[in-house]
Image (cartoon, rainbow over all chains, first blue to last red; front, side, top):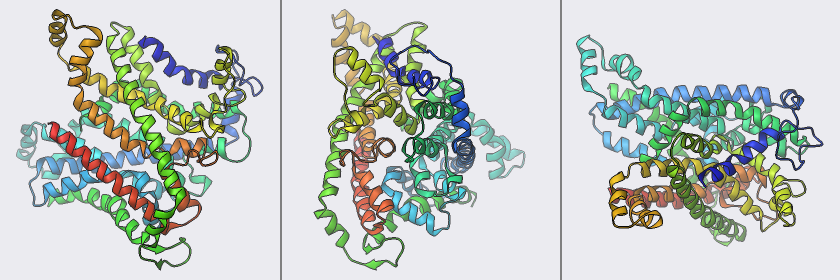
Length: 259
Length: 281
């Protein structure tokens, strides 16, 4: 029973893959077996669209956001877990409250603010507003609260400063929280469609999801086999992550469920 | 000092990109403004307009329709999946879990594209399958009555896996002895599920229900790609209406008023969520 349901759930992915290998005239044929092997579709998808550039853009944006977010979030999480200073609980509560404000709710004013900062239609506009969220801060704080103090004390003995102890000792030992967050941040940014759609006009800045959406809604006709081949190409990075790091992906999902 | 230094980037970022936009939305909502000419102060006119705007209230109805169908279905299907996956023993269980989780790796735009392809009114595989069992072809995304359901189906499909994993990890934490004790009392299968599993999943269930409900007000990516609100506005949910007012009609003042109202609704729902979750602990 579970197996049947599972097969049902992967059926659309299966259809995507086998149909992306069919010719334009046979792409809709009612045949559930892989019948053709039309690799030319992938060549067409690659050369006749903004796909290659958009994939590079997406990689650049996703990786930059992930790296910078991990750095900022870990620093804040560490400060909230380890240091005592006036206003700590207020700052933490305020940060958490921003979790209740999803992008769809603030897309209009966020666009206006970002535009006023001169960041619209630029890589900075794609990257900078995507860096900040309380979710990573929260998970890092949880992690550092349970982090053994002895290791850091050894750092102070060696004459390291507070910041030095963090960067040299605590951060390198944070792999258990960094790995699931890296996957989570990367996937979220690779998946991003709404914000890039709002903040970019220039086709050169399109991210991969925009390039894909354009193929089915751009006003001119792209054959379905080519559209599907493009979708398969765009899905490759997430699928690689999925199969290589499924364990950590599951770990990350569980962590999000505990908050 | 180090503490403030460590916190500064995030405080500044959250301030500029979350907090200020909310306040700015309220400020802009008090103006008549098309983003090109200077703002003209108009008091609460935008809120009055909102009150009388039948298309806005229509979009609210569409949003509620979406939530009322989507939330219980997602809840039920992911709980069922978790139970089914949990029941599978041995090597197959890992493979089945992967099958359930795989759609989670599909991005929202790709899910929309697959949906459009499979639900094609003339040649889509779903219609082929329907024809094979003697049912006539359906319009799906081209029909005012079916488009919303088609979109719900696509969004359900890619979200079951994530919620299934959360349910599954909660089910795995239930001690085996509970079920063994129940078995001695003659409670197995459905009765064991009803009297042990379900009550012990209450906290997880609350979490999933509330997160899903709030998420359901925000479904936009797939709708933008698959129907853009059509046909005949039948899939124009509130966030899409706001999107169109702001970015297509450039009614920034009015769109800000709508967004501010939506913010208040979602923020209060989230507060209720926090209350419910923290009272359980």
